[in-house]
Image 1 (cartoon, rainbow, N blue to C red):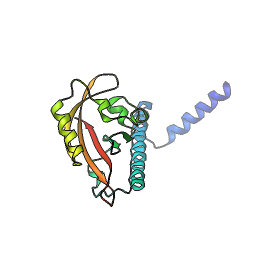
Image 2 (cartoon, rainbow, N blue to C red):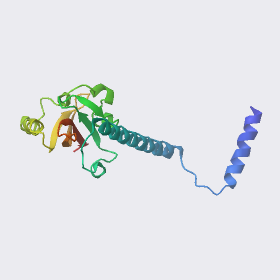
Image 3 (spheres, helix red, strand yellow):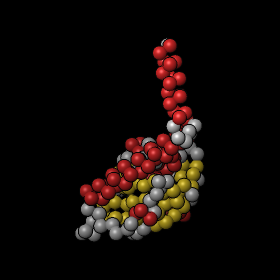
Image 4 (cartoon, rainbow, N blue to C red):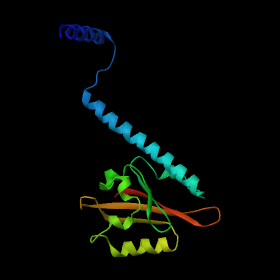
Length: 171
């Protein structure tokens, strides 16, 4: 143990001579969490890009204007089964992306969800039109949250519907 004490004292002396800014350990965790969010965000964008490339999307919108680090992106197939969800969905509603794959977005709705809003969304989907709505959804633990959804149908170069993309934020 004596050799560790000498080492610690030597390092303390050395570090005190440096012209550095000392930060509390708590700040490291804060920046580490933010860095992880950024890594997940860019990873999600990369997966999204490859999904669009694989499906031959003809999607002329610059998603960077509506997709920031707090935006959850959910992609469904034409039969409205979720085929992709960003990792940050867990912060919004408690579900891991893997838990929602293959499910209908209706899994987030319940008794408190406005039937008129749901009907308007169903009509837009049926007509293959974009929509912009705020809907009351349910978290995994049963609590409620307001979700602002901007959704768009995506077609291939032949005009065939490939997916619906929903950009979602807590409202």
